[in-house]
Image (tube, rainbow, N blue to C red; front, side):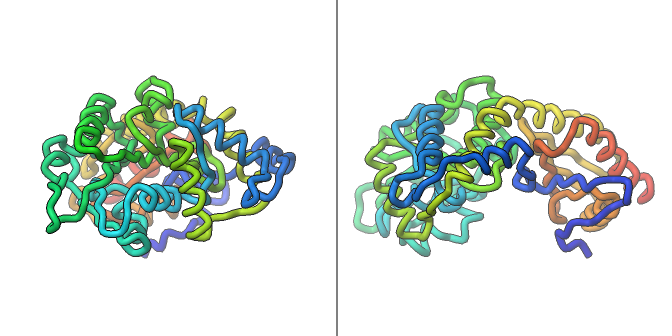
Length: 351
């Protein structure tokens, strides 16, 4: 049975790991940047490389300031704890990371109530649902303080017009806005706009360095300077204060210079894979807008497909009705044909 472990695969083939864009290895250039990084104690505000990264990300997103966080989960948590007090509410998608995949941190640690709304077929929220979920000023209800959105959602880009409409509703009702922009880099690349355009409707943005950009760790929370000062205090409170962390910040700076410009290659490879798999009897392919697609085995045990590919040295997401496949910087264009051959081979054998 599949256990999510790496298979050595055939001796002549390296493992192609498509489970996530978090599995990338630091390149030689990134490792050199780590070794050469100027560092200091960041808790004292004395790490110049961290400061440079925080300022650069904030500038790219059109915000005043940023704070380096160890993880995207902590970055979203700090944002929620700063936006909402205990017993107050944030509106979020029911499958968004900040609600579903962060261990309930906002409620467990902040006493914050989540109002989780259904998603449409593109992963977005409906304006009517957001409007209807904002509570009146009544002692029976939690006070609605925040609209928390996500872009991208499972590889799907949220259109700017819809984002503007949703954030406009929030502003009309006095709500703040936060974006889980873990893959905002992919969204901007797919839309063909700059990062500040995607970030503009939001008060705060969490952006991840360890997904499409290929750094080994860290996210940056960006927003107004007074908010970021508050978030820095929350970071300390939840154990995120780090010392000579410029060695990791250097990876983020390197990634912005060298990996951000190549993200379109991952999108193209995902599109090529979806095209190569089209028409396979017994497999539905759900293509996204960026670097992800989902495979839906029809009438077959998804574990069998996952296990077959693992034996071929190809790792895909855990068995499910829809299995995630993610392209990233460690997957070459030439790998696409091998992946197609592996999946076609499974279905040819099954039939």
